[in-house]
Image (tube, rainbow, N blue to C red; front, side, top):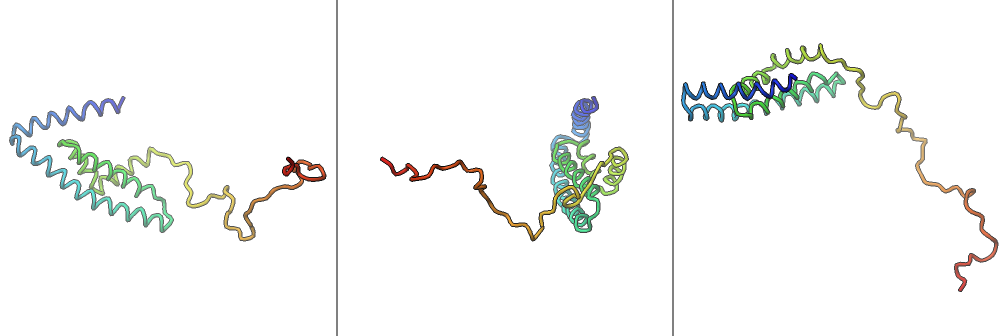
Length: 159
């Protein structure tokens, strides 16, 4: 039900804002603002996305929990989608998500509601080790299970 309300209310909010802003400043300045916010948002998205990727790599290198850098990356990606969507409300939410304090607050809010069951790095203890040097791979054929051949010639050369 919440998703339906979001999909219904966001376009209505955007239409109302376009009418209000367009009536106050005119058509061309309104369109210029929409294009400018898309360009500025794309530039900020690239910077913030690169920073989030560095943080994610650092968490993997230091064997730390990657949940927070991954969540920040997902929020930056969502912010980019909102900034590329024409509208004032979506731009405001997108720019807000590009601010690290807003993302941190959203992450804290989400982390209280999400429970992680398990998390492992690399091979878990239940998986067999594959780095043993005393194992030789190969193929074999069990000769004891072959059908019995009658004595004498093989009958293949007989005409």
